Length: 99
Image 1 (cartoon, helix red, strand yellow):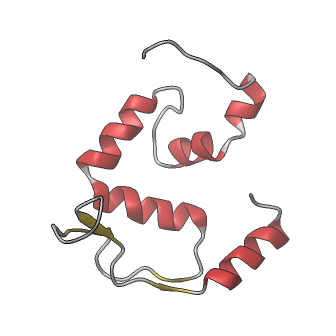
Image 2 (cartoon, one colour; image 1 turned 60 degrees about the horizontal axis):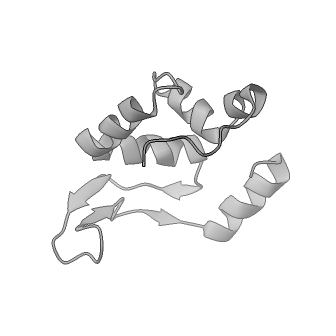
């Protein structure tokens, strides 16, 4: 299906996390296909950027992406050496007013 079913208001789009993430990483948020190509073409850089953008509290580890045929569904592991404090990350995000 190629027809667009819904489009956010321009102001909502520009302030969305997807648009902010795209711009922060040098992409035009209106060109989703380019961002998608980056995410599958260089998944290590993409997932490191997601970690940094989300301001996750913890250590991301040395490896951002690892192919693993035994990993369910994706055949990959993302940030396999990461350690994080999920509760603290969520509380800090809530305190900042993040979603």
